View (cartoon, rainbow, N blue to C red):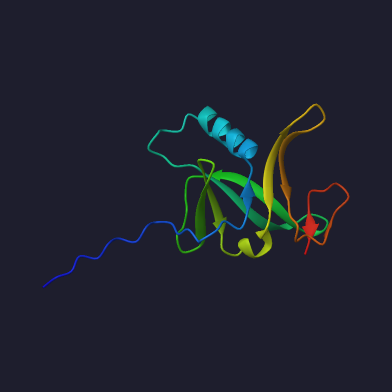
Length: 128
């Protein structure tokens, strides 16, 4: 007697996302992806990660990414946007909020990290 095993999904999704993607940020990501003329069968993920650098030691980095490694990444669906987070960056991202601003004085994505102990003068890097 043989038993067919179900194929494991290519991505994993823990119970609750460690970050919050606001509806405004999700809408802007969708707009940017639509401008890229990506074929409908392709999946584009918003990748948020932490990299070394800047005056304070760490920087947040946002990218669009077509590739996800199920061994290294967790994928979350938020407001219709796939969000990829590598497992190491998640150690620094708990409670982070990604927002988008389109105001008179400010346009762009912002990342608020409640775990950051300090930031540099220009606000582009942080310390833990």
